[in-house]
Image 1 (cartoon, rainbow, N blue to C red):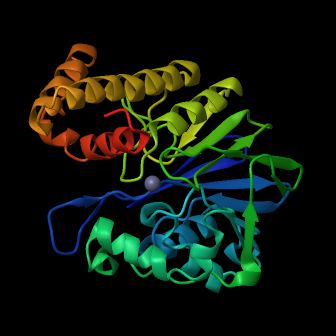
Image 2 (spheres, helix red, strand yellow; image 1 turned 45 degrees about the vertical axis):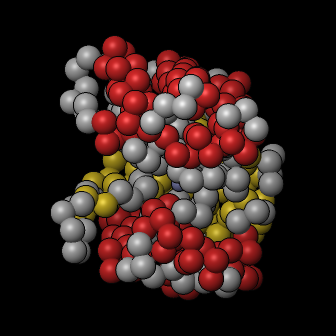
Length: 304
Ligand SMILES: [Zn+2]
């Protein structure tokens, strides 16, 4: 069931889901898709995976716009849940350009490596739940770097390079709303304390620098790719920074002491419960995916 909400003037949030997986009881995590309108021109930020492409097109039509006129598909990064559908949409919408950081561009034109990495992260049969990763035609790809502008009518959307979650991650600053489309670089926009989204390849130093770059813009809105809580942006950004850094401090100290991952998870859970006494997510398992990427980062850095 798709829900569409106007989040501020000319910006809509398209939320497809939650959707139950085909073969398991998991509920699949798709990124939110933001639809931006400016002087009759339209763009989306993130595409979701291919399985949601029909719902995204339907949502755009439902808002009274012709998807065939969509000019930009801006990808915060090329992970499956954000950009898996970029090729499917681009092939159907030949006027649309896929906007992607220069480090990700070749991988959406020829997605072989992306598909291989997706199989490692999501399993061999990811297509059953998420749909295929199709190539984006090269002439529809615009590779961008920090500071580049994506024009949409009178809106000048500014690309902010925000690595950490992924080396090709960008956020998008909209001066008109003073809002930041943060992708995964500020984690889940939920209540309570959360770190940025930690996945293999995570770089803590870059993640903290990226948070600081976003904080320096002093945004009035955070349009995160996951989560929809109504939070004061400055408080939320500082909370994400603190949690991301504190998790790192806890895991680094424990790694140096030779502790097991289970012991580290207990420490993280204690930290979390002290700050979020009402949060029902109290299992140790919620930290299973977080610890190895932190440890790998500290090992790469040579401090653990
Ligand atoms: Zn991601």
